[in-house]
Each structure stands twice: as C-alpha cells, then as structure tokens.
Length: 86
Image 1 (cartoon, helix red, strand yellow):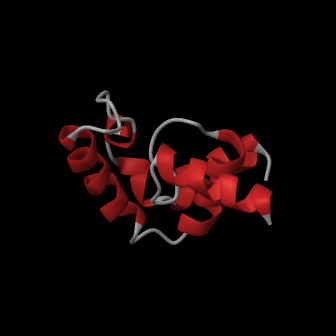
Image 2 (spheres, helix red, strand yellow):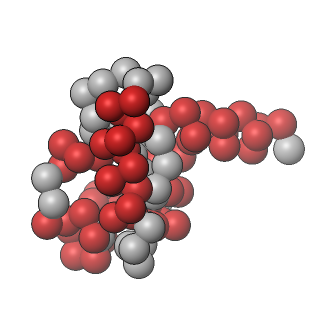
Image 3 (cartoon, rainbow, N blue to C red):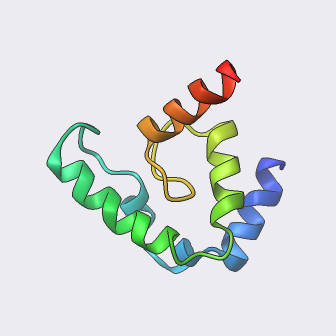
C-alpha cells in the first residue's frame, strides 16, 4: 500500500484519527515500564480498529518507531526477522 493511500484511509477509518497522536509514539525507552503503559493504551485502541491489519502491514513496511497495527517496534522487528527466515 502506498503511504499516501494509507494515511488517507487512516484519517477516514482509523480509531486513532480523533486521538492525540503522541499516544502512539511514547517518548520513553521501549524497555521501560512507562513505555509499556503508554503503548498498552494505544494498543487497546488499535485492537478495536477496523483497519488494524492494514495498519500493521503499513507499520511492517515503513515504520521503525511507534505503535502500528497494535504492535510495538520490537514486536515488528521480531515479525520481520521471522518473516525473513521463512
């Protein structure tokens, strides 16, 4: 999916569209409790989102930071690593 098309879809259908975008980009180190708490709030919104799978695909392809499709950066790194070994 092209980045522009995804952003348009996100702005129309994403559950995050009316929320503070900073929620999806914690300023804490990913290994900290604070990061986990903030990411959990974002993931809870993602889990109710009708475009979660599309968002995850976008995140896997284009994003190294933030919560995308209900996943953290470390979760996406693991997914990419697993995908490249198959």
